[in-house]
Length: 629
Image 1 (cartoon, rainbow, N blue to C red):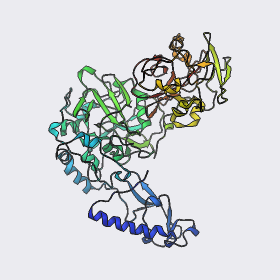
Image 2: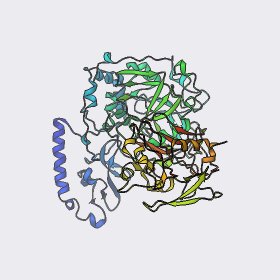
Image 3: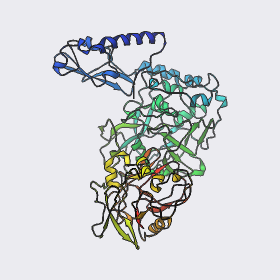
Image 4: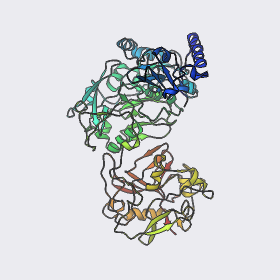
């Protein structure tokens, strides 16, 4: 992704001309900077800082290094993702290309300026002219319009008439935000240095979360927040009680995250609108919260802040989530205060993705379907990862726990309780297995006989060939890692599993039975009756179908009994753009007619085995287990 700053106006043209002159002088002949640089092992070498200060740090020089003096002051040209600027990063200080020390604008004068603006300027901008939703939704974005807190140019008009936005009802009474908290939980505190606001914090798992929704209204360093955030019903009192509502690009502080944009701003933590040292929840962190509380909304919702029809939350976690509602531009209304809470997560893709706390379904999920432009809440997480044992009851005050700094998170931060490290570890040593070899690629699989049928005892890992092009196009490995295919089997879309484009997502599918599908010759996709028969096989516990290894996560310990040798493992699945629930779910395609995606499933959180028959909000990629004809 090309990274550059946008300079506008008359002064911008002058600066741009000067930058071009620097580039022409500097990039035409690198040796003109320092003839001895390469002899000393550096790209550039100078006797004083003045030379480096005149050397532009830019896209062409990213990763290049320089030294000032005799191997003393070493610098590297890096792109600072938080502030969208190239800077020379040294051991002890940081320089811009202009030679001045680089500081993020968080001074008291900046804070005073921003507090004097506050909601007034933000909402004045919103009311400056009538707003057309189509003009916003169809606006273009490009690599030249990547914004963050140090450089910003709004190429998209953002204004609307408040009188045309429908007011939403609030079905609860709240006088102070402290009423949302659990008095039996010892909270920590943090202060946002940008505006002086104080927030309670709480530990969930090994993460320190804000226990309140963010209420930062933006300043000159956060123009997207100034322009694209607001209070429910445009009422400042609602911001004070429930926090502020932000567009996705305002939450991520990056125009690449507006509606329809890819929102791919790197693989490290995204600070976004959060204070220094805090960040927007990552995909893994959002998933961890759903793992811990997915079907236990009461554990994370505040006692107050919900409509009376949803009862009283226990808030055992201290997370204190209110049903703060949203501003939805699909129907141009504020809505769902008292019914639903929403929290942004950084999940790549053009679809709007967020945690959704649903009073109607009494659960916590990551919303994965398409959503029109929507403003929702922000909960920030500390950059520090706590070195404490993980369990669903790991709730402690964030003010009393030591921590170690972590600059990035990966999927391994949510690990399996008992992972499989070598192919075959999932099998029951007391079961006598057969074998079969797939003639298409030579792979060998264990098989087992159950109730007179011969099943594959492991998931298919056929990647397709010229005769099976759908498997090449519509199958993948969990998290796109080949080792996961080897250990857990391959994930297939429905059309790839059935080997028919007529079985694509949301398409009516009526294949023959038995159906070979993605299976080798002589084997077939399980029928509805065979999948139901497998479900009914469980007599006393769902553990009878589970391998002893390959299940559990940070908050869940599971060891299967594998009574029949079927050795199901928690291979997870992919829903839309996101990989989900390794260690928690196992889905296996079944040949069931209709336009919904139908599969055999295991969910260890809910301790259930089922044949899914409902609607799915997006394309699912699941495993294939073949049955011998």
